[in-house]
Length: 332
Image 1: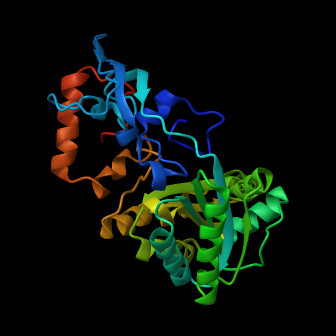
Image 2 (image 1 turned 90 degrees about the vertical axis):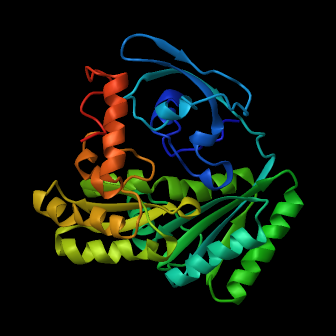
């Protein structure tokens, strides 16, 4: 199977995934496309075709040109073919949906999951109470545990049903004994697993019911992961309907969302550039997986040094001197 699983899997395309270095729900297990793409073909601005479609993983012959196009958002060339290192689809999976009282409990649960189930752990998703409340109110889904400040969804996958279930059960029992987790449920039947995943994957859609959504996709150290909502809520005050967060803890990727009845320049000014300066102060990334595009390019300085930005400009100038490949994007 393709080692990539996204919330937009029903509408996205492989070329776009590669050009944005899409991450997704199971990067914890399968890594990023920088590792999964073994070769690609791209069309340059001058019409020349660059073919690096090697299908073997080891190739140490000069510059690894394919990496230039992965995550470049189409600014250096158009990706037309891709060779991917696919992985064996797990024959079985088991999921736990857990409620935590404190963010420290969430952190301890994550560390324990990596320690106790390193060979099986494929996803560790974080959701705060406001995100779940939004799903309940706007989608009508039932949540299988009592209300808690934080929730996590843990997936393990492999080839043996009983081994997976026993491993996850042993882990959940330990987490509950130590009070990291106060409530939880497990599922291994495909329909039940799908229902638990549906809760997590419906958050973005459910937020749209509140009006306008200010979306932020940052990566920050896990010890600071839980601070974002409180900091932003303190800045936007009652002007926002919701301030909530969810994300992929396995790669420190946090999705911070603020909603208001309609777009407000005042609310936007209270969020930006604060969220980017805060992320930069933690040596994080202002875009963990969504890319820079047009809207974030003026904030690129918060994640890239002047020397790095200048090097990007040199590459762009050399490969696309007329600026016709996805113009006005990424580079300020």
